Length: 155
Image: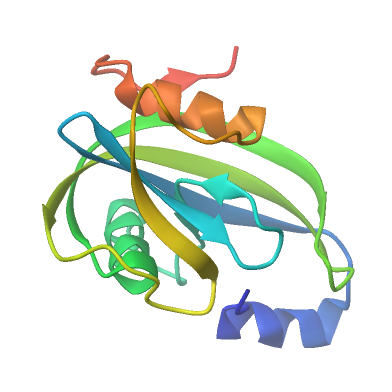
């Protein structure tokens, strides 16, 4: 997974110490289908995820990540949920905790395909036939598909 340039620069200063980072998840729907990516680093299926650039609006970051990773343009419809994910240790030993902002998104255009080296596969899945994935990712999808207008918060 490519590490954003600003994080590479910070890592030069702090090494592998834990960082608190923002993250975005784009749950993209097209009718009754959900767009998922198979991560190149661990082979797991997930919605589209990424890290906003410094100063980037989170909703715009979700749309950018969708385009960069899958070649698909999306409408970012609403903030679906927020959640914290502490204690992540990446394959290179870097430690981080993430504040995730999950967005419900709707497909606008483009042919879904592997558009960068972060994914090994990109596919549309029927909502009732999705592959196995981490519980946290299933929760993000459920939050986005809930139809609720208010964002969900862990209480």
